Length: 456
Image 1 (cartoon, one colour):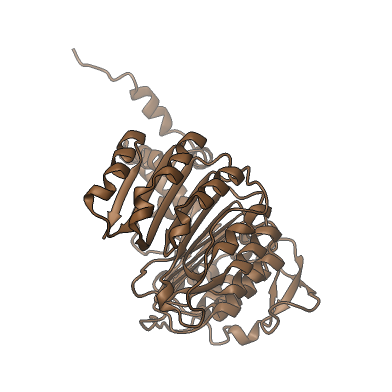
Image 2 (cartoon, rainbow, N blue to C red):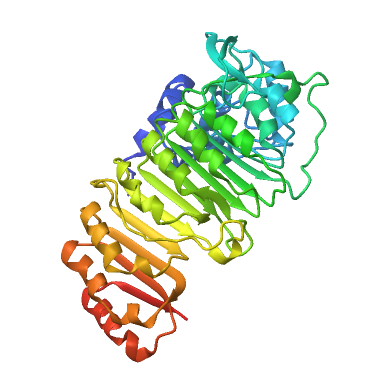
């Protein structure tokens, strides 16, 4: 007897659905689910292909697979020298669509991008206050009306190309509703040059006014092997994002940030909750020139919850003595670079102790780098316990030589075990002490179950 599958009728009924019905169904499905439906049989496959083609006419490839089209449809648009001309050709033959909310940019000239982003489309004009390229701070803002263009729909933009921030600014002129911006810059290799899509395409000099980005909440800069100083332009973009909440600056052999960056954010970004400054190659990366005063000004002026600053030499005990006013602070990570690489400031006195007020919300504390012996003392641990009552994670990594007496005296360290119930404790020390001198500390680590490493 012939066996009948119970879902044969269901599959057959799926094949009778109209394109409009499938279009509605697809809007609720994940990419993988749509692909699985497409693979059921030939009839469904052709129907799904037609629907996806109509939903996403700019698949940006002459020969495209259903999976590629679905990824573009749901994950966003990728623009490079190959895909941009195809998109332009479609826009010239049809009513210009809005670009996708998520756009990633590869090797393509700024001029060509501006041409694509500035195509007129339907929508309501927006009036926004603006600054000029030459105005990095003061002065009154002037308001301009922005007619809707394709770039207005972009919410998340990732720029990965060989260019400079000053050129990116001309592109942002059209992305007035941007929420999440990542600028990944590398000028070591020459950018792939492509023929201009339009002989009259605008350049940075043609866009003197940059709008205020009220929706921009997340901003990331990543520099690789750059030999120019873009700090003014970075500060300029942060000035234009009054509601910014998350800021990250990554650099490798690139422009190291300085106090002007934090001072600018203290003045213009009161909603800022997270600042991360992270070099990716410590051995060859320049030290950042960020000091106690600029950090404290940002902590107090903004709503900082997470502060992570790596590889700076100008942080001293004064930071901890004044940090008590940062009432919103939940996570603090400081990596202090090699003091002996700095001749301008010389040896910095520490006297490391917390003060200025109680940090009720601070849960995570990570201190790395060249700190002196006072960071493992009664003075430090007593102030920590008094001013940071709710600590749950503590990481201490000291690259300076720790003397023998400090290693043998475990009383300061023992205090934290009676004061806290830590989820995580890590201790890394540079010592020249003998195994006998470190025996008790190793026993304590085993007893209290914390991570202990020695660097000699």
